[in-house]
Length: 473
Image 1 (cartoon, helix red, strand yellow):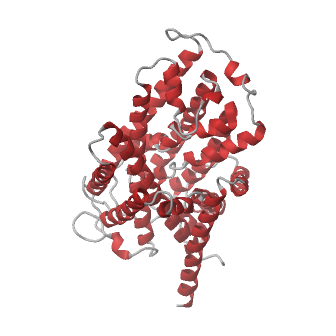
Image 2 (image 1 turned 60 degrees about the vertical axis):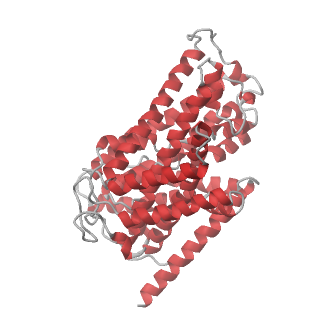
Image 3 (image 1 turned 90 degrees about the vertical axis):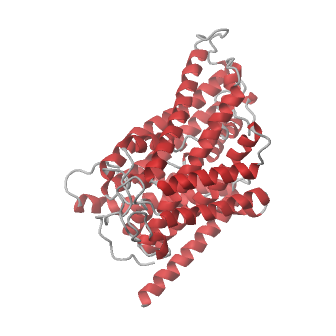
């Protein structure tokens, strides 16, 4: 498709509130990717890669860091509630902004169902007298109300959720290091036996490391929300730059450090897929009630992700409506009553119709997950399984196209710059292409690629038809 005429880099004033503080963004950046995928899903990666899972997380984490740096560079130069959807439109044309925006919205509202159902299952285990569907309803109502009230409510929820998750990881790392050194009661130094035994550090060779990358790379999804949220902070350009800088290295430390502690303390063959390796470690070092402690951490992580996805989906569809890519009725913003009124107060500047539209589709996804988890909902989940790769790829392509324009059209030194441009951007694109090919070759992940490819193709066709019609008018 021919390129559309370039749109100005300078963003239009946002009608949304600016109630998010720097601490909200910083903690959102740190906690946004610490979720059930790490606490529970990492067991599947260890099962296929053994101690080599440390290298798998290094590779996947490095890719996520590059994507986040690119996104941070663009968001610092031109903050917008649509973030990468807006960047894609400015770099490639309306079809790109439309496609990536709607696909990301669909991804968030479908994954929201998994998080709500998972949290409800844990709560039902604690209070069996309350049915699982009731817990789902409670969570959806609470977080919808919080997001409708003010953006500061979202920020406060996420700040404390993220603080709990980060605190849990730091405590786990501290206990793990003490246990490895034999400095805890009734423990002996473990040495390197678990790293070199049971087949060595790479028991399945590099094939195992690559399989581990496929198992863990999508656990880094969620970092993008911090750049969406930055548009509603007091100083978007500076705040997003600070949040990205503080997040990327610490997140890599949390992920890689956790895996190193786990495979050093325990034989990798003792880790069962579907079971939390964190619980196994805490049990091994004698922490009482380890299972329930980790259940509580996973519960918080799921609610945090639910809250962040509801926020991110509402802001994405609002941004689409701003650009004429979604129904204009979604532009209503709380405040003085005008559809575009900008409320600076605690309850103003919230796109309430966008929130309600997102939660309505999210709730429909939850019902499908509860009623048909192995059929209808499974197809929906597969349809978004590889969408994150499409989103990340367009972020990289957009950064390639916009970097020179950012330098040319903005004054002074950019607040945040991508490392090694353009070489590391091209390397990230090559890595994502390699992940996609490997997923196609793997029997377990092939359905995700095919269904996600079909979903992406459908949205692209709609985008191109809309572009063609608009040019004929």
